[in-house]
Image (cartoon, rainbow over all chains, first blue to last red; front, top):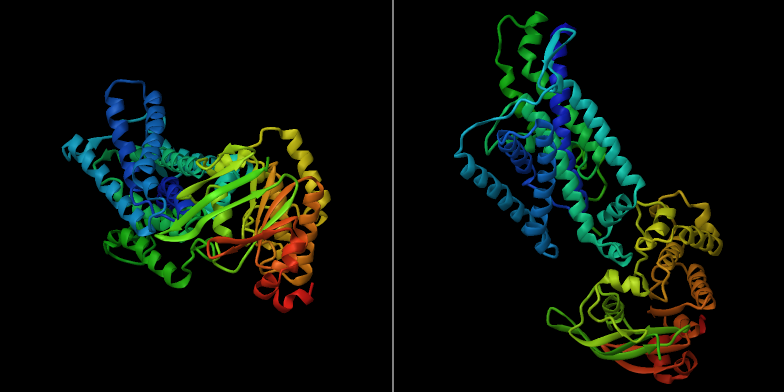
Length: 307
Length: 241
């Protein structure tokens, strides 16, 4: 029984970790701007496409990865400056529409460059290699992901709780105006937030596309949505919440993918029922249930509106 | 030369003039107060000086320098700190962090630690609650913290926006004691208050703001003695003092 479940659990943890890296970007930007950054999933996709093209140029793979992370962070920075900063005093709805605009712009841009073809993601040494753990054969990335996620999250939480810029981020997230009165440049704090969020989405993309190695302009949509649901599930604005939410969604989704096999081996069903189809639906069913039962999510603030 | 000088300041919000050309001065080391009813333009005045709102006309000079077009950050660096209306401490930061964030622009680490100690000596209640989140403090404690936070910027002048608003009468007395303490340390204070009686007793000089215009000015005693002021702002409350 355990041997049947284990491989699904493993890939669930891995995918969950990748969702977590995207979800942090959603939740941080929401925490500071009260904005659902709809373009965030597309930043993740763009990171994948950049990797495809940089790797094709023949650069050593580790340098390519580093470049991807830097460029992705830069993409996040530019998006904020161009599409969100000019709307700082505009109603929140305007910024949200701008975010949707950025999302489609990025997708169209990638469509234009790739011609809408699936691009093969380069194999990254070590993490693309296969490894056998217990009953499961998987890629090294599956093991690397949760470890890396935990390290990055610990680092991020330290940054937010122990450093000056982290303190400024917490202050700005509560009160723009008073933060300004302390001499904090809110625009640089907001930029930092986007840079961190995009950087983490870049890390997530390297891990994710090593597992699912094709990239197309819509590749960011589903992982982006799942990560968004994870952020809402955990309580949007809360980083630990987003991470826990992402792991729960990743694991549940993969267990549902394997539900047929698990039930069959357990003797509960005599033929496959095709339940794996519902793995995506589950995520959104979960979203609806949370919104009804606990609208603020697992660790959400009581009031989400700015004073 | 006065520390702060405002000349012919006009500020409008969406076509409505909140300030219709006001001029006033704040002398070094004094407590100067602007009194007036709700909507007279008191908060707008402070917000314009601190760069949160842009004026349409008029200039603001600090130590003789024209700071009208400075951004908020630069104004803080120039030496003007604000204790905003409703205290606005960062509820999700600890008391200590709230003080530290006041020193956000400063690089002199050792002096920052000394200043924190100084503020803790001034307000021992804050030291006791150093590790508590500021959101859990009482209104009076939050006001102390907001003053301490403003002091951490090492200002030459502190502007206080309605510090007594929403606080119990006993706490209000504490607040005015704090303002007096500030003055004793040589600090210049620009205070705006609806509590005209307390403000006039505390101040060295006062201006009366009515619907965007300064209608009267004088020392605290002069205005307290004025029959127009007594009628409009003090009423029966003058007996409570």
